[in-house]
Structure formats: structure tokens, C-alpha cells
Length: 121
Length: 204
Image (cartoon, rainbow over all chains, first blue to last red):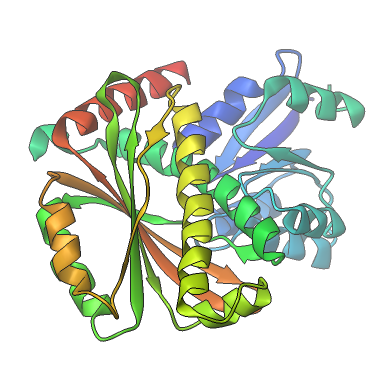
């Protein structure tokens, strides 16, 4: 059975950029969420193998999502994809359990390398 | 203004490009101030340039404020002017933390430095995503304590038809630092911007 991947970003452009940047050999169904609260609803409703998570979002931001994932010990790989590239923010999300941090706009080679590193492709 | 107004897709696209450009500017500001900058989703809106002064009159009048303006010129007729509005309550504190001398000249120097980081880094980041490149005019600083702030804004806004208003709050770890950034863009440059956004959208 194919993996299900969740793309969480408030911007339609960013979600589309993310979809298009995914490696061709990544065999997954894609679902999307437009803010952190929606992402949590998806995570609680179905098995998600990997989530691509934006940080700066309305309702609940990416850090808030990571905090809930950690507190509830949810089993999901999280790759943060954000424009907030401050070193302190990168450290913060890694400390909260994110697998990797990718700078926006997403670079498909970098994304492939990270996904290969963690056996997602 | 109808032909100049943005579709929902264009607005979303511009908002995301602005987010990325803001991320670059905040990172640079954080390194400069040696602190962490809390980024929020910026509110962007397209308004008549003539309406701008009245709006900021309420927000800034009577406060110790500063306005710094920077003109930018890109390829293909994309041009405009950015205006940064600051409340200066924390300016002397920030100046002291950064090791500037404790006088009005140093405060002006600090504001110019910070504005240059915020506007130039922001605009360079935006230009790169638009596959354009900007050159800049020399910045102009106007302090409210020396001048009638709003009348200067009126004089500036008068030259432009449309304003892309980006409200940004840079909240630092140790102190808050409120500023509003306004991009003033002439009508023909808005049409150019819309065309570029459509190209970006067509790629995805």
C-alpha cells in the first residue's frame, strides 16, 4: 500500500510548488491542509507517513503542530519547509522532533537528497 | 482600479513570495540584532495610494515616529517606493544594545541601517523570485519630531496610484519593535507585476 503524505501550508502556491518538487519516484498519495489545526485533524483521522510542514501559518503555526505531535507521541516523519530560516528557529524545530529543515522556495534536489537519506524514496 | 486588482490566485502567490522575502529579511535582522525575530503572517492589501496617509495618521500621530523611504527600479518597468514607518519608543534602547552612541545622530544611523536590512534584503529576495533585479535610490529619513510626518507621507503617496500595503510586526525576543512597511507601486508597474505573477503561477 502506498504511503500517504500530508502537505501543510496556508499558501496554494506553496502547496503546488511542494507537490511539483516531490521526486518522481516518490510513491505516495498526497493530502493537504491549509493550517496547523487542519493538519492535526488529518493526522488524527488517518495514517500519515510523512508531513511537509510550513511554519508561519494562521490558526496554529508549524511549531504548535510539532508540539502537539511530540506531546501526543504521534508516529509521523515531519520535514519542515519554511521561509523562516533563522538558525534559532531551525534548532527549535529539530529539537521538537522534525527530521529535516528545508528552506523555501523548495529546491527539488535538496528535497530528494533529504528524502533519500531517510528512506522515503 | 478593477483592471489593477488581483485575483485570489495572484494575491496568494504574492503573499507567498512576500513571506519568503520576509524570511530572508528577518534572518538578517536577527543576526544583526543578535536576537530572535518572531515572524507572523503579514497582512497584505492593495489600496489607493491616496488613502494611505489618512490611515496612518490615526496610528502614528502624536507618537514619536520615523519614516524612511526607499525608491526601487527593476527591469521591465517594475518600480516603486517602499516606506517603513516606525514607532521610536524602543529606538534608544536598541541603539544602546547595538553599541551606537547615545545621541540623535546615532539613532538616525541605526534606523538607516535597520531599514536598509529590512527593505534591501526584502526587495532583493522579492526581485529574485520575480526573476527581476532592483536598483535603489538613496534612502530618505523623516522623523516625526522634526517634521509633519503625515504631510510628508501625503506628498510621497501623491506620486503613486496604488499601494501594496504590507503590515509587518517584527517582534524581537527582548523587546517589541513595531514597524509597517508599505510598497507604493504605480499603476503600470502593478500590471507588470500581475503578468509576472501569472508566469509564476503557470509554472506550478
